[in-house]
Length: 406
Ligand code: ADE
Image 1: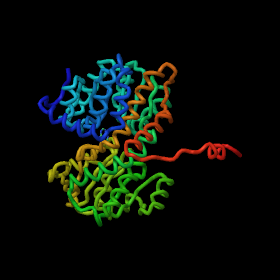
Image 2: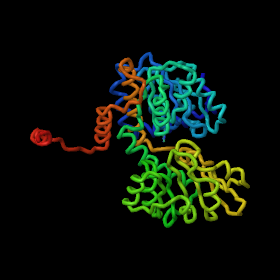
Image 3: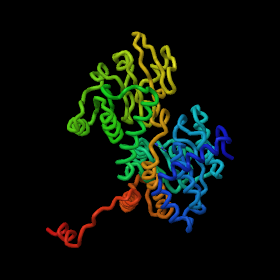
Image 4: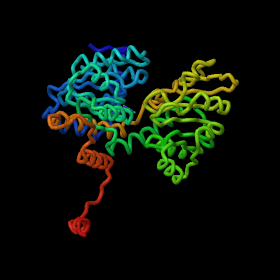
């Protein structure tokens, strides 16, 4: 039996599900096409994703393909309780509610593992790592995030990866769109909702110029902000410089920035020392997977007052007021609802095809991190183009011969 916050929210959740589904056609078309053969019949899927309206479209789809679906949340704070109630009303077992403590979050993951999933679909790696620690034997796992993949690569290097993983995050139809456009838009939404301040003319410091940082910086620039990038990777820093952004060290940026957004996946990006050097009134927030990028512990141990939903005023010993978005946790999912449905349709099509791939091919797969097969990636791009009524050219035979001749 599920454990959720409030079963009476199911109708509200259904309306959200219907809205997202309308805008996730490439995923729903794939489910309709495969439904008759029920390719997931007999499989138990343990899913650890952000419980959002977009995720509900994936989970209902997996169930329609014959799977038993058991899910928990990929983050203790981000569950949308109406969606959890809707999923439960559809016969999906849900162990998730908003604002969980660490022990509640752990308990929910244990409940999913108790169902002995054949395949795990993870967002960040917490469930898969727990399955490793409890020596649970599974056929394989799919992973939604850069953070999760980094963790499995460390496991693999130490020879401790016990099953194959498909790195959904690294598919081009995932990374180029979800990480860039999805995070770009949902970050702007989250910061706007938290602050409701003008972006135009603000100096916004974006830490990290990977796909997340790029997406966030471009959107901030589009809103009229003056964007400053901080980086440790020389190639990414050069790219940011050539893209027209000012690149500088964080120790310099802290003195001039109005808003700081961390997008690195690394710890200790904005430290106590940085916070003490900031201007009075600066706003800081994070959209990386874990809340390790900003020293929120230091901020929240000061004199703190909530000024708006998801915005805390922290008065430092030097009397400066620094404002923290979503307690330093993933702001685009807490202060906003995460990426929009059109983007998640791409990411979750990769999830669906990767789950089917593991089920069919697990016997010949090794205990390593695999990319999403290129045919799948390209098919998803074609489906997406079709759904947007965009047509592309095809090489002629003459062109193919030209290309392969020497
Ligand atoms: N990660 C970022 N945005 C998301 C969304 N809308 N649903 C599920 N996972 C997400």
